[in-house]
Length: 218
Image (cartoon, rainbow, N blue to C red; front, top):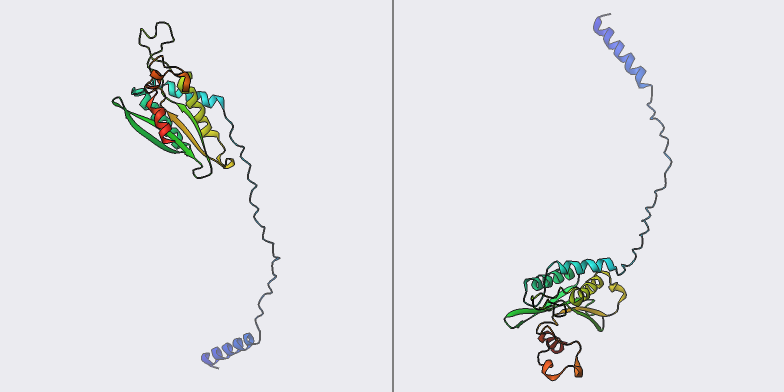
């Protein structure tokens, strides 16, 4: 038998042997289905409402005192007005600056508003200026020393700013105005305390123009 015949015979034998077997695919065992876990959102921690803090209010007072004397027209008075407006804006209040001229300098009232359109208006006010002369302190008037204005001016502003920080406006069904006025604008050092019939007619003529403006405006 030739070599070619032997090769063909061998190839036919191999093909015949292989063709007799059928390939069986392996059996796949299905994996058990794991139930998908449902994400549960975390329970939010309730945020307690802010409470009026006397220390914070005192810090607002000290910040005003750092501007120095604050009689109308002085650099300190301009700076403290800017400070009030910036603080209200940072706390989310709408700020209006009501400007008017008086005796050669620009005066202004500041109004912070919240819950605009939320109901009847509640107005809380304080003055942010101080008197030019500390006439009640012996020797201060002669030395032309100004009133520091910690109690008569800065304290009321500090209370209003802390209210702006802590009022829970969602619980108030009123529109709130915080008004910062210039009640000392035309007042001399000995301007009387009180309004109405207790003030002599000659003194009423020099009643601060800022108060008059508030009357006209409101």
